[in-house]
Length: 214
Image 1 (cartoon, rainbow, N blue to C red):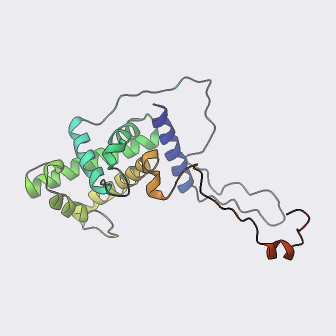
Image 2 (cartoon, helix red, strand yellow; image 1 turned 90 degrees about the vertical axis):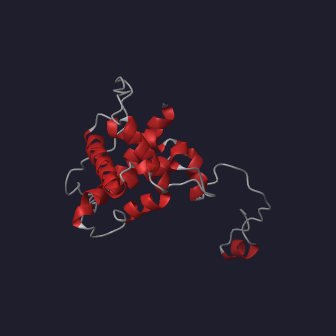
Image 3 (tube, helix red, strand yellow; image 1 turned 135 degrees about the horizontal axis):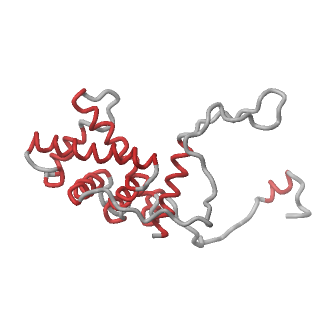
């Protein structure tokens, strides 16, 4: 539970950072930053540990939605030489917890995600008469190719494209805030590195006159 809370808080911080192109420029002649040009929708604040936690809350996703979520998350983030698959680090469970949280932002994401999962399976049945998780990898990729990375998706794919953008963002957030994936980002952690450590070159020390303290 503590890991889930930590990952959720990390995402909340990231979301707040991305959503806050705040005008903190100092006005002429002033030393303090000017107030934001408009109020932030989501503000960062220290947690109030004197209040009881509102969770755990009931999870909204059905078993069918979780199966589709797992298949799509693993298609986006499969297991390879750089890290585990999305499902191996609990991304589907993270998504379920995220959209089930009793907060406005999460519930808005929940409408997009659950509506998008329904759209995705409707599209799968139209093309192949099967749900997404039962399609071959090529069939899954063909559908995802129609809703990912396009600036102007076809009108019939707009709902799917909006869903996929949100789904992919949440997948990446859940995946890369799990410690098992950090090496894929190049993070090696607090480990000792082999020496030697020669220190500052002598010519640099002499250039800045630091012979006495070097």
